Structure formats: structure tokens, C-alpha cells
Length: 344
Image: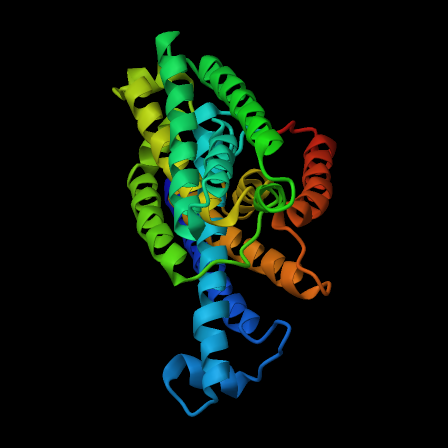
């Protein structure tokens, strides 16, 4: 009887988790449509609907919706999902709740690539390519350093910190030599994060790379569950722990580099959203990864709405995520401490 009741409870729990995941994945779609109405020029529901589905509407309104707002909002949703999912994966791989998607110096490497592209006047496409390559280069360097000294978790984290500091210094060096009237402001604003310049040419590569990274992590979800155990337990279950760890880190890095190459540096999403998703659906990555994706997309869409509508001039995303993210993280942390359960 107890066995039957236990199975029933587990089944009902999984149904509840699946329902929450479905809701979290639908919410960004609703927010995205609502966000199309907002901006310097507020639009009506009928105008947006007609622009999206071929109704009669002014061509200026159709161009505003399809060429300006829609690519920006799609990019915001994908970037938010990427940062949140990579953060959830890294927290599982490193078994550390304070790890986020930028742990291996990806943001610093992407910043260096973008800065070099701006100094070289490579244009928007060049900035995206250089920043993506810089993010991957920084992560590859951190992984190579870690593998040369044993490949343990602590060594990998320390390698990421060192690489991040080194690339940040290189960014400062590029800023020092940049034109203070033209190039330096562009580099500074890019490093503060934003999506104002995003068009379809930047969104399509982002979507393709993100599909590869998200799909790969979801396919490896049960192995990620096992990696949250100790290394000895994972090896006892027959997993090639180090190879699997580097594969998961590579996929997470791919997602982070793709996101940062489009949005610039956006902090805290990869740290806080996975904790919020874990509180809703639990630690099983079968539910945690899609829940993090949906919640991350929704959160960044809302942040982008605030960034472009709250003030006459646009607010950089990294400023917003820091101002809101730090108090939220502190509240979550204190809640766990009061429960007496520590921080998972």
C-alpha cells in the first residue's frame, strides 16, 4: 500500500512539475506579444496583430513591429534563456550555487573581441563575430589551463577567474588606446549591455547556435543530474566524469558566448533565475532546464521593456539586472538561511 501511495505521489509531483514548466514556457510568448505594444510609440493590439499576420496597417507601423521591435524581443528572449540555462548547467556541473554562466571568463573574452572589432571599425556583424570568438577563446583557454593541472572543479574555477581577470585587463588596454570621442563611448556602452541595435541579421545566428547548445544540454540532462553527486559516486555509476564535464561546460559556454555577442554583458540572470526555477520545479534537470529557459526569457523581456520605456534615454541592461538582481539574490539567500537549510 505504501509503495502504491509513494508511486502516486511521485506521479502527481511530476505532473505538477510538467505543468509549471509548460506555464513558464508560455509566459514569455505572452510577454513578447505585449512588449510589441510598448515603446516610444505605443501601438494598439489591432495594429500589432495586423503587422504580424498580414492585415491592413500602415507600412511604417509594420516596419516598426517586424524590423525593429520583433527582432529585439526575440533576441531578448533567447539571450535570457541562454544565460539562465547555462547558469543552471554550470551550477550542476560545479556543484556550487554561486556559479553563473560567466564563470570561465566568457564575458571578458567577448568584451575584448567586441572592443577590438570597434577599434577596427568592423561594423555590427564584425562585432558579433569578434565577441563570439573572444568568448569561446577565453573559455577554451580556461579549460586548457585546467586540464593541464588535473581538470578538477576547483582548478577549472580558478582558471576561469584568472582568464577573466587577464582578458578584462586587455579590454582596459584597448579602451586606453581607443579614440576617446568615437570608439571609447561605443565600447563602454556595449560592455553595459543592451539590445537597441539588434536586427534580424544578428538574431538568426543567435537562434541557430542557441538551438545547438540548448538541445545538447537537454539531451544530457540525466547525466547532469548524476554529476551533481560526488565525483566518486558518478564514476561508480560508469560515467566518464571529466569528459562529460568538459562537454557540458563547452555547451554552456557556447550559449553564453552567443548571448553576450548580441546583448553585451548582462549579469545576474544566470545566477538568480536557476535558483528561482529550482524553487518551483526542484533540482531534476529534466524540469529545471526548460523551466530556467522559460523564466530566463520572461525575466529578460521584462528587463528590456523597463530599459526602453522607463526613461527618455535607454537604460543599459547590466545596470538594471544589477540594481534588481542583487536585492533579489540577497532576499533568496536570507530566506534559505532562516529555514536553517543552508544554501543548496
